Amino acid sequence: MKCIIYHNQKCSKSRAALELLQSKGLEPTIIEYLKNPPTFDELEEIIIKLNIQPKQLIRFKEHKVKELGISKGDQVTNEQWIKILAKNPDLIERPIVVTHIGAAIGRPPENILKVLD
Image 1 (cartoon, rainbow, N blue to C red):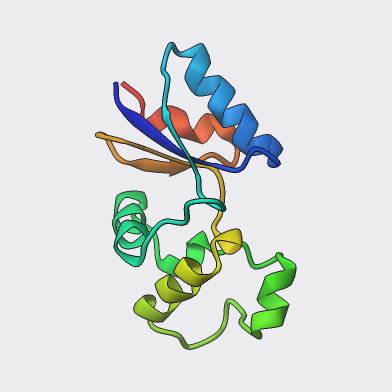
Image 2 (spheres, one colour):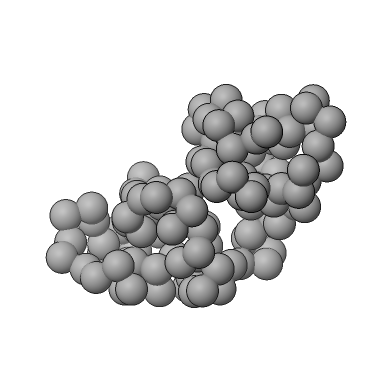
């Protein structure tokens, strides 16, 4: 099975999700999204596969959120949220696993099981 993990090695949940994939015999394509941020179009596709609103992919507890002056309650379009994520990949919830079945955020890591065969 082909799968992709948007990964941050410094994140314990991301490392646990990668280990879970590997324990299932998978060797996912690892995208270190802080080094190689997803484009607007890639983020849009991920959000569609996750079946969520773009602001649900934002880590609102990050210090960067305060720097940007944004909050969950802001009246911002989906396109604007995605642009914020594209410009600030450190705000992207992690890890994200994408397969042909769909996508899942690995918090907790067991969430990714729903997109595996």
